[in-house]
Image (cartoon, rainbow over all chains, first blue to last red; front, side, top):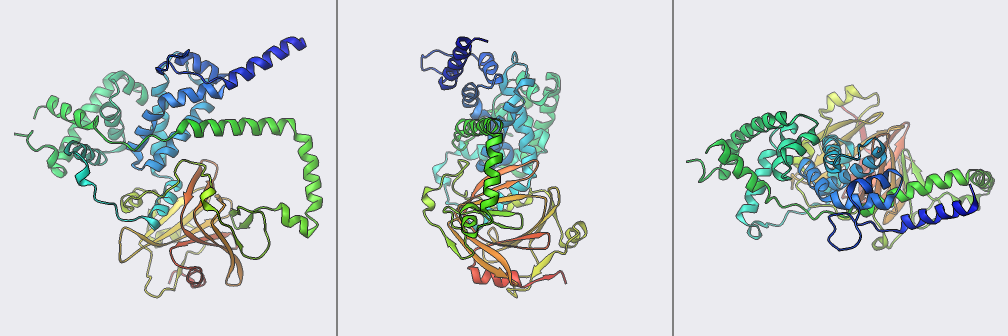
Length: 218
Length: 267
């Protein structure tokens, strides 16, 4: 390989590293790359491309983790680990598919492990020592927000599989097809599982959170 | 209410769920990726240079004054403590400027959450007797303070070696922890405490012990987990045989030492 070609490749690589990629959802008006292209760059080792993808999906991943582990610090750890792990196995990912279901699937698995990990234990202890009583913020929240919080508590009483499907379908508002992809099951299975989970949830709400039924049950 | 109405109600409430602000995950991830890439590059490119430097350092370690300047952490059992300033004498080291610390995660402040629901969902919760059956080393309980009694929570965590954790709740505020005691066997976890506000050398039963006060960055590493968090607590660490003990409490150093020296086998 000639020196010229080598130099050209080096310059191209440097430019790519310095480039701030714009994800297609970015409305800044600057040149944008679509997800498959960014994934292709990332598979080639381009961290800037991966950063754009992380930024595009971090909210969904963080929120799912938060719903599953119930703590923002733990959720942040899970989200970080999700993207690091996805980067590590990105070569195995089929770039023609959407990235979000795969990321959410990793996050769901990590969250399940996290609920039972020693790291979580240390975090809990740390909080325990310095925790002050939570200020009463009831007045600051609307009744709908309070009801949403109560609903979350009710869902937490379901088993982890039921929680996952309810969070994905209703809290993150994913379509059935994407929910199926995250859980790696058929769409029909999602529908039947969802129906069973809702039935259990209805029982939990009726018995322990009647406020969520008030005015609707008559 | 029909199934459809119920589903509609659930959906309308669920989408209104309030979440904490999403932290900057991308910044952290990119930093980690660039660091690891750089590390690999350095390790390949400079392998020979590193070998030479290692040989030079090994020679320097034979000179006490040079050793003091090079070894920049204190090790007690599985715990390595990295002071802010590199002055690893055998005397107390007090470092300051915690406000300059740069946490490795974006979680700098312990959150204010009720603890009990979290404790109840942690794996390995068991009884004292059962824990003792599962580990090969003796679980010790403090005889001081006399009113302490048995722990309120006992956990055995399987992390390439059974780690035992005992938790005592504060009798005045039952959702607060009064004290916790960890038994960490060698070869399970590597624990790093980075830049504690205070590091003080002391003794427990005439054995070297280290007292640290937060805030500092705690990093726990084993084969499956790399966990980093900012800690704001007082911890006494000492080791006996293959077990590293970690006592976390709000009490002062002399009280913590008294507790540590009062450990006895389960009666």
